[in-house]
Length: 442
Image (cartoon, rainbow, N blue to C red; front, side, top):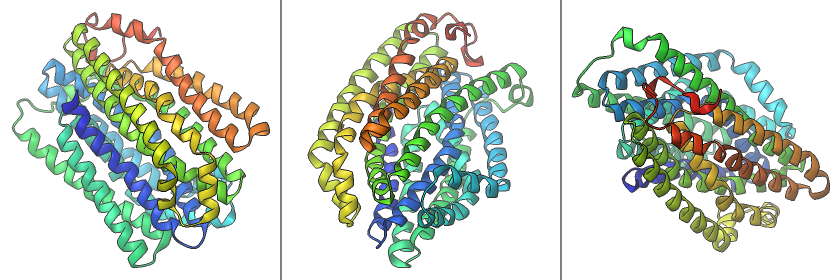
């Protein structure tokens, strides 16, 4: 578990580190609209890209099962199928960039100053869409074949280049929000090129070939589309909750929006760190299911759960002790620091509330039992919307944070109810890599 989780945690933490640097380099500029512009732009791309996050999650699940079954030909097909999808979706996003950008800015409802900065960010970064989506597939495939160290190196390359260029373009050249966007675009192109080279070299020594009949096999394509559709709907619900959180933050003014954006950056560190255990559960669960080994499946779940819970407790303690100092590092604007510190307690609680949903997501993705994930997330989003409607009027921004924590808790409870049936199904399916089985209750 640690052989997988350790590198994944390190790789994952480079992503929120990048977000923190993005925020910090504009957080010391003289107006909070720069922070808000990067935050709004980031949410729009988060909605677009993680809406297509099935390109990473579905790839890992199917690849892990093919790896566990020792099927070299299917491993190649598990790479090529989603790569074709990634290129197609990336080209579509570029073609539709104008209506997408206008719709995203309208949905966020931020001030004119913040919206102007976000529009600049969007107009530049959108051109890296094909590379960004290809990176999802490459990362998912590497994790599926348990090459976590290689995935770590590619993530370090992606985010390292981005961070260096942030400093050069924003601090050095004074490009402000445009500099952040250009840094991201160049980094995503660099990582995609490097990932293709690394995987091509890796596959040269593997037996088998990507046969056209296997690549376009109707049963496997159908399973891929079903799983991807379920993950898309699940992720759409998650991103809708995030978008609502950011949009409601904007309604409280630029200062509260900036303060919440800083707290969300710290929450991203927690999410990406704890996700290392979820990714380990995803890989090990998928491999055990491919090998039809229920005992190994159960042992993987127990190990990842125990270490994930311990990591969540440590994260909460670290945020409690270091929260105010970390906020001060992110911005020199007094009013933004005061706002962020006022709501820090909600951030302290979030790791121990959210870790269970992350772990369950990993287990169900690895097993490609995605209909249960979809249904649980739809129900959780409904609970979040009800909480926002009831709690925002009397509690303001405190009500918004409480609603989001209730959303995280609901995800764990609603998906956890499906776990016993999932464990009982391991070892019963004759073709686990083809797709969801009867344990989803469809």
